[in-house]
Image (cartoon, rainbow, N blue to C red; front, side):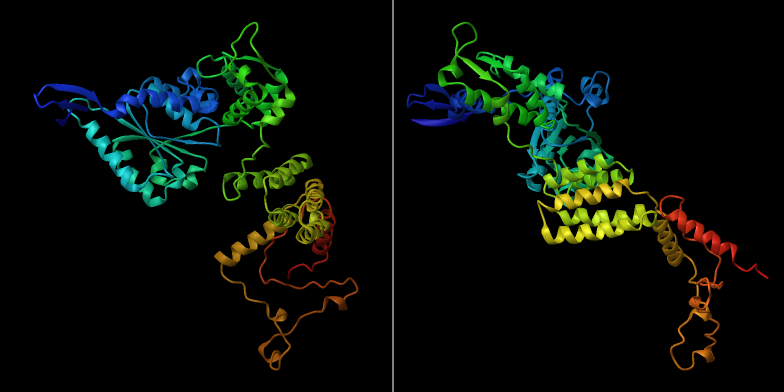
Length: 476
């Protein structure tokens, strides 16, 4: 007896030469394995939309008449980068595109694939495109593209530029920092936003009613407050909301109830607010200490204090602390703001900032949150002036870019023998004057760097400078 491979089938030949066709063992069990794998898929995977119409959210570029929808409907996809927080539909939309497009679809994760595998995909794409029997284009979906280093990303560049492949890159990192500039310039960036509470509730109801992929065959009674809680607590992450629903269904129903049918006599699965609260984990705040959220939230914190909004400042402070931000980092930013944005409009602000830093350093969390909140509120409600900051910035620019101003001779050091021989004379000691001030030149050039405002304490400084100017001797 002998075996022969014939076009994907095994043929067994008897000694008499009569063939008996057998499928590969992989083909024999493929359907059964598919059913088994589908049975263990989480609800969030089973409920992934199968079409553009089922996709929830991202109306800003996927709504009727919007750019990406027009591209898909016309089958005119160019390379794109999907950028946004987890659970907002980046991978899901890529799979919808795979089902919708007439192109060959390749999927890979940058964390699990190397340059060799990428080159193989690119070579296959070229062969597929130049096949005289087909000439089919290829879409490469590369999840977590930010995990590719610059050299790995460069491997994609030539084929993206030539149009051999259409790249869909997905990332939670800002692509302007995480993706090579040449790839950025050849791709359209679509920024995904957290899914709205209304869309989350729509997805939850769809999962409850769907008899094939969801819980439509079960007798579920769910309180509206439970849906509201999940829609809020998931923080725009559809995956977390669907996972919470799945946990609630599995934990609130008996085995019989989980297998029951809708209608009279079927065991009920009752999900109320308490069950909903227990089924969703504590909100994982989107805050990578080295990523976009870190810089975006601290920026919002600083701008809220500068804009004199204590409520916003306290919220962003709480957001950072809850996410695990280093308290001393926050204290440093408060200290910088005290000088940059308040300055001499309230000289006490820098003292408050210094005290807050010292206390934060000594006592740490959780108690230092009180000190940081007090300092942030003080900064937000203090009068504002950046006159001191603009003064040093302007002076530094002159030092860097203009000719160096020599020190006037009467201001130079005289604490050594021979200073008078060098002409270092003529300095007038201010305290010898009855007013504590004498009219003499301290810079050598006519230049004003500091212009105080009329806010807070600076209005007194402005009045003092006006008095000085009024008592200067007229130039001869």
